[in-house]
Image (cartoon, rainbow, N blue to C red; front, side, top):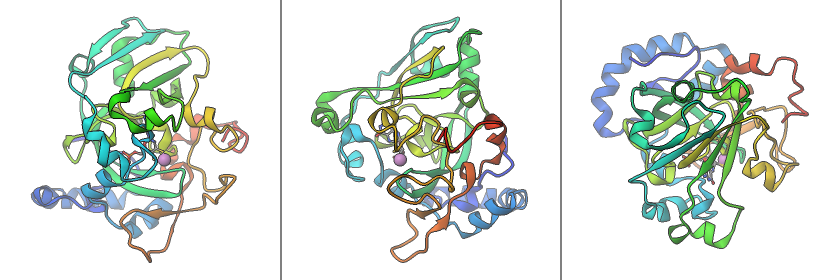
Length: 300
Ligand SMILES: Nc1nc2c(c(=O)[nH]1)N[C@H]1C(S)=C(S)[C@@H](COP(=O)(O)O)O[C@H]1N2
Ligand SMILES: [Mo]
């Protein structure tokens, strides 16, 4: 069974598809135990969570390479070529190379993690990911001592990406993490949802998931992972540094210049559902020690 975390979610917080009904019954006992171990604020919020469906997770997306609208990725991403797929690993690593996806993942343990997902725009979901810990991958390729950050890059396939052709942002989409964030056990490279391969609109065949940061840090359809010494560029930070910081930790006390971040709208909650409180670090308190002594207003 997957390792468990102090305040992660359980299958009780997700709406399984019909085919998962059996699974849900099996998990019911474990789910009840998991709920008991939840922290106070997170537990209160999780009790109020309405479930997300696979249809919601696949039908309401941000993937600007395919356009601005939440339905654009589902509409267009099916055309993206995801097989064969290779990932360039370069920079300050012992074993750089162009890895076929299967070789990159070979020998790494795939786990299931049910994580809250909080978009900087003020909406959220609960998503059951399958993936490997980024830390395990980094250990496999051998991080050199001089490396301080990890940089990521998304595929660019203009022929099938209307947002790239329209130039809605500067592409390729790039992101970065400090090395201690990248190697935190919560940080995943996801390859699946609900035990199925990722849909293209969710960032197939491999995407980052950093659950305590705003969703835009969780870069999709990764073709390059670089170990670097300097803080790497990040697309939204480059686009508007006053609105999107490099760190972008979920923080209900630091508002976006154009809207409050104190609450969020849970997708699937219905038109009249009240907004739920946003939690510091999206409820993942175990990352707080990464930022000890840092001013999280200045380093937003
Ligand atoms: N390459 C790329 N990655 C991306 C984005 C994007 O536009 N392009 N959008 C980000 C944002 S804003 C969010 S909220 C999440 C959405 O992930 P989901 O559609 O799988 O829920 O992906 C992130 N990763
Ligand atoms: Mo987002």
